Length: 617
Image (cartoon, rainbow, N blue to C red; front, top):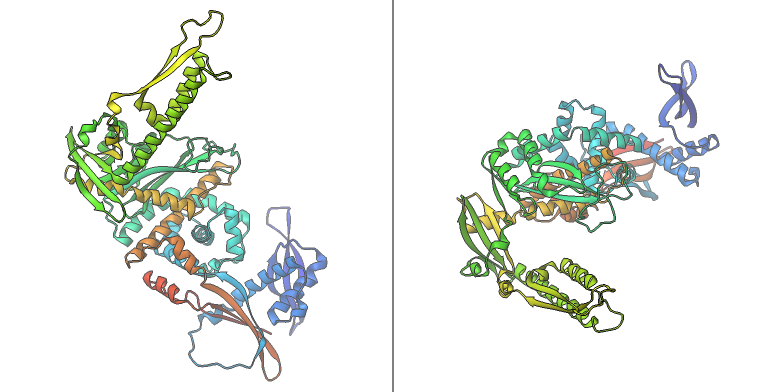
């Protein structure tokens, strides 16, 4: 075999394209001819390395180490070529029915080696759920080209199994994963092709989210009685000056140094996403709900009938609550009226839950106002936290006030009246909880010179009378709902399910590579986020199916277990009557007990792929 360079020109174009072909000479009835073995593509190697590349390919196929090149780049190209050959020529072997008849060969044990190890377990689970959710059919029905389906699936499953940037996913699918063996797609794909695939996939966002919402409801028999809405954000690496959504705001990861991008999402009580949308990083929480509800109702009109939306205090404005009522939704939210609750109203609370081992104690008191239920709740854990924060802030504020008051009589300390007043304002800003409890005053010096700025004589403070019983409100929060049919315990238990969406955001960021975002263009950054959302659909489906069997592990834990189930090639030399043959046997590693248990609970065959056999002559 040898390398031949060919040049081609597309019809209607003057540009030439160069490709490398692996060819061999064969005898025919018309004389010697060249037979194309494999199109290697446009490899970046010099003509003087063609012979080394051909010899290395042949050496890998026949198992002769003396033919291998010492150049790592040459060997990498050669192994990619061999991988294509084996995938092509071993197909007929894979279609044969399995034989249980023993087959004995005379094997050179010293020649046995394992090569081309690729991760398989996580990809197998993600690939199966991709098929069950019918994403390929949805894309084809929407007019997507069939050629892009393999890359779409590889992008999403890659985010599920090996989260990272698109460049990271490209290296993963080419060099470390068996995803293309599962999908039956091309072994090689350029990074540019992958970026183009992300653009196309994002263009079908609305179609895919509507399809997934309906398909998951039917596949998993979802009740869909509750909807949880919240926002989170992720930060950019770089300035992202070409992205109009990249804005600075309040970062959930405390990355005030970086521009942000905001994701708003609605999920149901089982954690399945219903709709998502991207906003600028400085987006106000209260202004997003109406748009999201409008889009959700448009995609799934049936969800607007007798459904309850659960939102947090930052979103629970009067305008948003009116929007929910107008759209036919019920609501449970954190009320913004806690400041109007008097300490004496916290008496006679009713215990609805207690767990001594977990230090959980929940007490509530019900009020009715204007066709709404207001439920005053007090949590022991939150009570201890609030008390610790408040008392610590009060202690620090008093310490600082004492320091500045003593400094009025010391040389080198601040004494100007205006500056002292400014310092007091800074302290109130720094310690807001303590600030509400104290009246602080600055007394000016009566005999200050007219030619100089007024000086401060003293700083005085006193705890306000209404805050003497402030500790009675520690750990309290107010729930507000129009669900008059629910009892106190049901209202509280429904609200605390809001942690589901917090779990979803945590999974998106920690397990699905949503942060950070390296893209500098708006469309690419949006597409990156959407791939994580699609991967979260797969993650939720996997965890939901495991929970039905009593397995409450997270996907991150399951992924770690499945990482040891791999696909590999076993190479060995067989001695025949007249010659030696080099065998390439592509197999899956034997699944361990924990692998089989996970596959069984997910309803999967423990052998993801059949054996493939190639004999090098």
